[in-house]
Length: 163
Image 1 (spheres, rainbow, N blue to C red):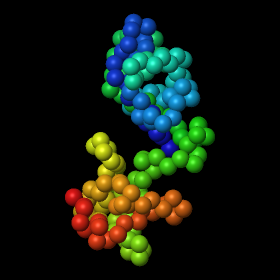
Image 2: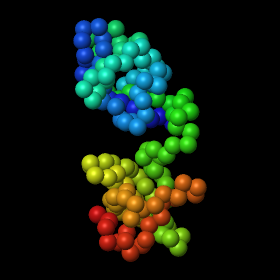
Image 3: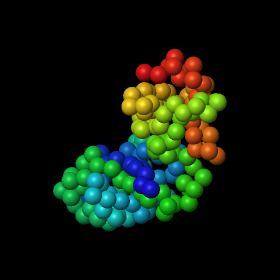
Image 4: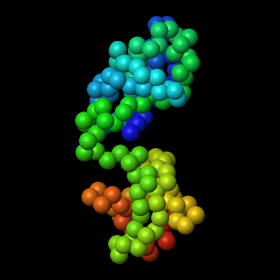
C-alpha cells in the first residue's frame, strides 16, 4: 500500500533539489531512501536531505536540473508501506478508508469513504445507505477498535453531530 510522505512545493536551487512539505511529522524523514516520485510513481532514491525552516530540501537521483524539478511542482512523493517496518504496527488515517462504522450494539451505520483534516481534527466521511455524512474523529465521538477494524459510535451521538 502506498503512503504519501511529502509534497514537492518547488525547485530549490539550480542542481535539481526540491523543497518539500512532509506529511508524516511523527516519523523522521531521513529514514526514507526509496520513494516513488509524482503522479507517475517514478522509482527514485533520496540522495540528500537538508532541513529548511519546517520543510526539507531534498535531492533525488531522478531529478538532475532545476528545469526537471519544475516539472514536479505540487506533486506527491510516495513510499510503499511494506518497504518500511516502522509502519507494521501503526494505524494511519488512510487505513480508515473502507472501515465499517457500527453502534456499540453492533448495528451497522455505514462505511468510511474519505478522511480529511481541517485543522483541529480528522473528519471522516461516512457513507450511510447512499448519503455521506461528515463526523469528527474525536475520542468522545468515535472509537477505533483496532482488533476488529471497526469504528464504534453511540447512535444518538452520531445523529446529533453528523453534518
